[in-house]
Amino acid sequence: MVSYPTLTVQRRLAEKVFVLEVIRDLDEAIDLLCAELGDTADPFAEDLCPYFGILWPAAEALATHLAENPELVLGKDVLELGCGLGFPAMVASHLGGRVLATDFHPDVEFYFQRNCRHSSQQIAYRRFNWREGAEDVGLFDVVMGSDILYESKHAHEVVEGLTRFLRPGGVILLADPGRAYLGKFLEGMKSAGFEGKMGPGTGAQVHTFRRSST
Image (cartoon, rainbow, N blue to C red):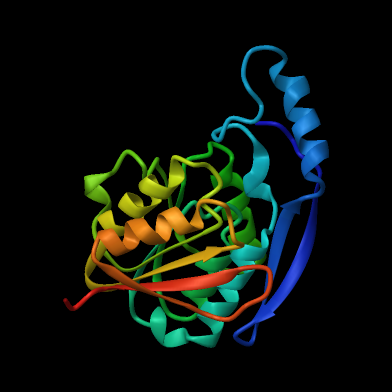
């Protein structure tokens, strides 16, 4: 694992200060990764590039939405897909959710567990590629993700990933900064039988989906 320079930031939500260790500079981190890889691999491949180490606006929007609507996760089984640094997962756990945080980048667990320690939390983590499925993961009352629509193929994959692990009557939360493939994703969710509602926000909006009654 490349040793990326980091810094810590603090966010206060739901009467708690969350301490997050983030990668200091993405361009700097990519340069370090390129030096480590040489010509052996593509540094921009999803399972290599350290995009996960940035606190993106969509993750902040999702975390804020949870803090403003704690009933969404209180006493609920919550799954976060593509958790990265883990901010929404940490907020959901603080609010009383039983959280499983997941990501498929090999370096995420190190940063996620470190952030949990910084904020005095213990949250279950599992590495797996939700695009390929994992039947033993189980079903959840809430399935959520932030900024996971950054490639064309993701629109269909994200629909399948979010709905595959949802318990009947459950809620899907997706925070997105307005990626080009959001429209295709929304169409896919409608075709899958879900009704969506977009919440307010700047920088990123949180979309809430429930299965249509019709």
